[in-house]
Image 1 (tube, rainbow, N blue to C red):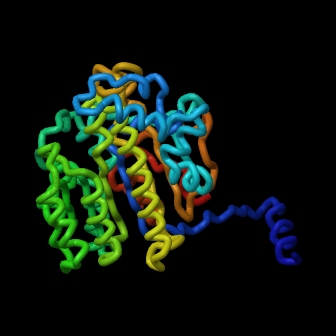
Image 2 (cartoon, rainbow, N blue to C red):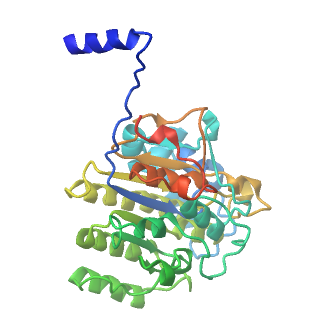
Image 3 (tube, helix red, strand yellow):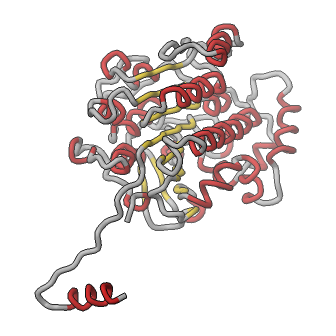
Length: 370
């Protein structure tokens, strides 16, 4: 008490300038999970009652039955009740201990800035810090830009501790696997970058022998559990997981399967969080961000996105970690963009990506140590 009083007295002297020291960052690991094409509307409002009652252009058999089941599973009296059963990890854990941006009903704005509002441009913006007019299609071509994953992997303290797993085959190109040198595993490719375990052997078989509904994208679970096996084995400091079923089922016109995919995504993310909190290398040392690569249209246009659908630029973000204040669901105030994720994640690790790549968005101050 005497020392504190002396410090305060000294700071009051005209010739003395005193500054509060920023808190040191506690984050030693970062994880980015992206849920492809997941709308902010379902995240914050839950299942849309009108879409639940409309089978729509569902191209799958049993559309009416699946819609009825989805209504029983996710339909509730209020949006708050519906969103809580749709994405329980997000609302029971992240909303309590972290921050959620993007609820436009409360004046919170999260969006992409690349101008195209579909997948490859969205991933590129998020992972490199800015949009690129050259990335104007979903063609599976190597990314000319360096992601912050590749940037970190060039540093001795992170080299060989960076990995990316994704359901979409284009992630090999988005992370420029051949150039970057980081561990990347996507779609149906077997994973061989660690010793074989019974679990990994089974997952590789499922990738090859399971149903291939989409030629360029595997169902999320085999990919996710492959990533989880790698987390247990290699304990990467920088990890990406790209979940894709939400976007695929939306394009197929199945609102029921889109909701199921969102619910399963939330469950897998919760399982990942529980796993890392059980490991001393990660517990209370890891920041997680969850977000989509783009949004989708409103009403009957919910299946679509792109430049002709302005609402598809609207996104959301969920942050949780030891350096992020527990402010919950954000209202008004801070506008965030996907171009800020790269600088924010690296800042949490004590690195200044924005200084190295000035075209990138600035870090989101609200989720950093004060």
